[in-house]
Each structure stands twice: as structure tokens, then as C-alpha cells.
Length: 360
Image (tube, rainbow, N blue to C red; front, side, top):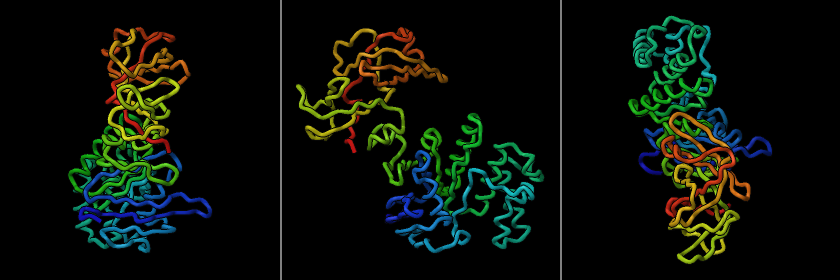
């Protein structure tokens, strides 16, 4: 365990009867980092967070906080407050009283409770709502109260269980900025569970991607986005075009032989004859009306759909074998392309922009 490790999961398993929700987790959470745990429903991310909070006990293995096992510590004796998806604010207390609550439970005197609560109300820009009932607040205001209530005790680590899921899109973006700035300013370790790639990748220093109770990959958002470790990760992120086949010897080196064609590989270590998947980011996949003269990785496609989101356009294409391909570009990059449904085009990419992953 390194010196900057705050939490370690060592061989942690969690079973519910015969169902194994989490399968032998081994990873560390660093002091002062923003760690996001993401995956689809049922992947084990919330169970992992609940074990750290003390709401579930590991069936096997050890969880350590600051080097000390905490498996047997009750929830209230851990310094691991949680912001819930439902926020779980007390409707019978006003805003200030909600923020003061944890301090009161710790025996902090009334004057000190008031001082510290007012500091956090000011920091979260909700001082004007101090005397309001929770029912009188908007979703974003309640979110800030929940954060102030958890952070007023100045914990080493804060756990967040999909706290933005109930907010509208615009408010989510604002709250993401609030959360990231808070984490940077306080230096508190944030562990954030979400199913949203945009939330995890915009805020986290590192991301843990889980599937069926196991960790598929841990890394920075940039590492995971550019170099997914498994086909599952590439498929889950949805930002790459995937071509599965077998590695063969080609004229200039190794190629991947797929139903859509043979594609040149660059710098990948897969052995000849191995089954593998080539991942190519949709932003690195190019389009042209004529077949590029010097390109080696070219696929004939036809347009099957188009989507505009802000300054970005996504073209949905289909190969002759029926495989869907996406290309994402700025509007100016595709302005001169014919994009009517059924239009034939060529999709292509440079070999160095492909990333090979072994089939599981």
C-alpha cells in the first residue's frame, strides 16, 4: 500500500445468498482524489460504495481506511458520510438545522454548530434559504444542502451515490462544476458512483469501470477513452467503432482479418491467429465521397441516420455486412458531404488511430 492510499479493498467479495454481487475487488483509493465508479445497473458499484460506508459487510476480504481494517466498524463510527440519490434531508428541520444535524450528533456546542453551519451555507451560496423548510427548495438547492450537511464535519472522504440523477440536464452540468470545485478546494477524497459517462469523465481524476461484480478497468478518463483495456469497456463507452476478427500477417506487418475487411495494425502486441477487436474512436474515423487513394483502412458504408447535438454532428452508417459505424465531427467538417439517407460514402482511419484489445 502506497503512502498516498486512503482506502484499500483487499480481496473483497460480497454475496447475497447464492448471488455474488462483487467478486474479489482489489484496488486503492488515493488521498485527495476524485474517484468515480461507473457501470450499468447491477454491476456492483453501489454495493461497493455501501460496503465502504458500512451499510453492507463484506462476505470475504478486508476494507482498510488509513491502513486500519474497518469491516467491523459500525456506520456511525466511520468518517465516511454519504450523499444519497434521494438526498435524505430531514423534512421536519429547516435548512440550517439540516446542516447542523451531524455536528449536533457529535456533541458540538450550539454556538460552534451555528458558526460552522453558516460557513457552509455561505460556501454553498444558500445562506438566504437558512430558515426555509426543505419542501420550499428547488432540486439544485436541496443538492447544495445535502452537500453542506455532509461536508460540515470536514471528513477525510465523502461518498456520493448518483446524487445528480434527479436533476435536469442543465442543472446537472452546473452541479458537476460545483462538485469538482469543492473537491479541489477542500482536498477531501470524493468517491462518486454513477452510471453516467459524462459525469464520471468530466469530474473524476480516475474512473473505475465495473461489470458483473468485477473491475474491467481503472484509469484516468483520457486513458480509458483512448485505450480501453477490454472489448466490454470499449462497447460500454460507446465512443468507438469495433471490428472483431483474427490477427494475420500482412504485407507491411500485422492485419486484423474481419468481415468488413482487412485492417492494418500499428504497435499492437497481439500474436498471429489470436482473436481480437480493433477499436477506433468515432472522432478519429473519417468520411469521404471518393475512396482515399493512400488510406489503408477503408470501409464502404451508407448513411442510415444523422444527429445534431450542439456543435457536434454524429453520422450513423452501415457496412455491407450490416454493422453500424458512427462518425462524430464538427458541423464544418461534414458540411460539404452528401448525408442523405442511403448515400454511399467511405469510412477510413489511420492505423495509428486504432487500438487492439484481446477478446475475453
